[in-house]
Image (tube, rainbow, N blue to C red; front, side):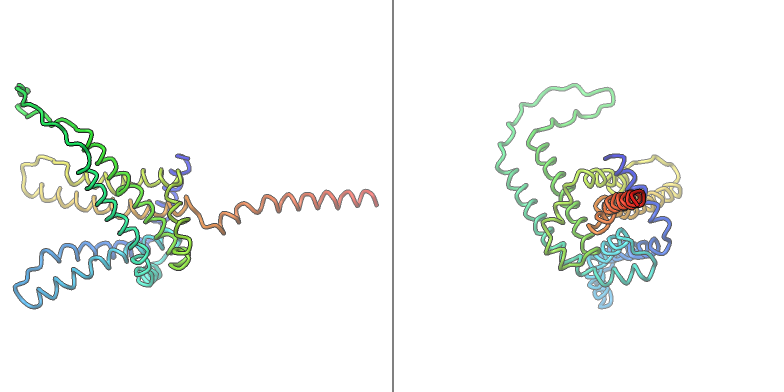
Amino acid sequence: MIKDSLADIGAAARALFKSRGALGALAVLYFALLAALYLFPATGVATLWQLALSGVTAAAAPLLFFVLLAAAAHHAEGTRGFFVLLRSALRDFLKILLVSLPLLALAVGLAYLLGKLGDWLPKAAAEAPRALTPGPSGAAPPNPLRWQEAMLSTLALLTLGLLLPLMAAQAWLSVAREGLKVTFKRFHRVLGRAFAPRAVVVYAIGLVAFGLMPYFIIFTRTPLSNDWAELLVFGLRMALAFAFTLFGWTITLGALARSNPPASVASSEQTPAPAAEETKSEGLEVKGEERAV
């Protein structure tokens, strides 16, 4: 299973970097999203045009996010070409938004329940202050880990960080593959694909690329004495983090599409074996008849 998952990720990566048009379309949409996210807080409200620009960027950022998701889903399903991918994304981004609404409501409900669970759990007893001698570095001792906090963090990671993104990815792929109507009609089956072991392994590997790697790239500190060198390293870190986020998510989505192929493709891959057996048996019958004659 792990070998097949790695093969899916490798095939998705080769398909992404071979298609320059699709790579360019994804990059344009991603940079447009980053620009909208930057301009919204950076634009002041001193003049009328600045206020209008803030409103436009506030409305454009979520729309560009769903356009980018639609483009990544269509690329995972085999759509290539710059303008073809942009046209498909602009056509179906509202469908991606609609299919995401139930999952967004589920995420809000789970976050609310996790907050309530934190209130229901028994509170940790206050510990008496201890006289601890600081180490050679003079650093304060770390706070003790409480099982309530560990359990809540684990549940939040499993539900909001693993299961819900997997279900959302399967829903987006189904919209790009079969359309919104069929996706809602088979919604329980579509979401059930998220719990397949192969899909979980693919997403866990991809999470390292588009989630953990950007985090460590941005927040790892490199001591530098030169201001220009520090600015250059910061710019390279941000570019590398954005590249890992875009390419990692797109490759993960493509690998998920390969781990759960359409039913027609799966059935076509299984039908040649019986057909070959029938052809072989017919050939043997013909040879037997010729010998009898």
